[in-house]
Length: 187
Image 1 (cartoon, rainbow, N blue to C red):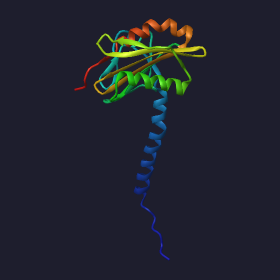
Image 2: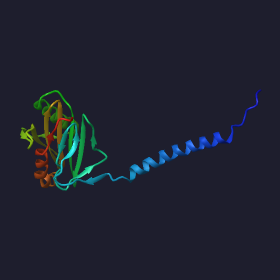
Image 3: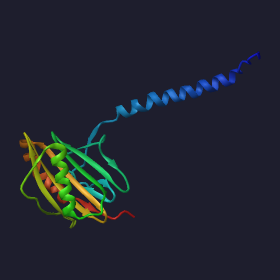
Image 4: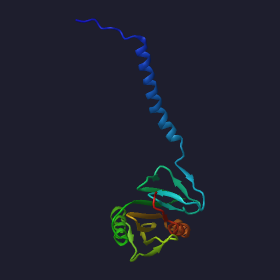
């Protein structure tokens, strides 16, 4: 049997230092994350970057949901709250037509949330010239509006949903926000 050698004290102090750093990171970073606000007010009239070169001017009085919003070079999502109304703009890669994108969006709303769709949707054109489809949906006590645009290999999807009375109050600001959606090819 061999005799074990005790480690010199400098190794123990180095190990304890590393352990202290790991503990500080594992405790400190979540504490910093929880200290950050979950949402913040957006500046009225200023375009908010969604991702992939797409921006939107949020409706007046919007709060951006920082926990849900994500910005990337090739895709992104911007989530806003207007009281109890949720307003979401999502952009991602897509190679189909705007009619096909609108069809699949309606199908997703029906299948995943049980919404009943209105009989038809209509053409919508943004201030920057993007052409898309827009429609309404409804379920028990809640209703919503959706819009879909396709540009340069991207699909831009917009949904707004809330209680019927609250959505009605916010509808003009939401429609103006949808018309503000713009695309600028990233450099």
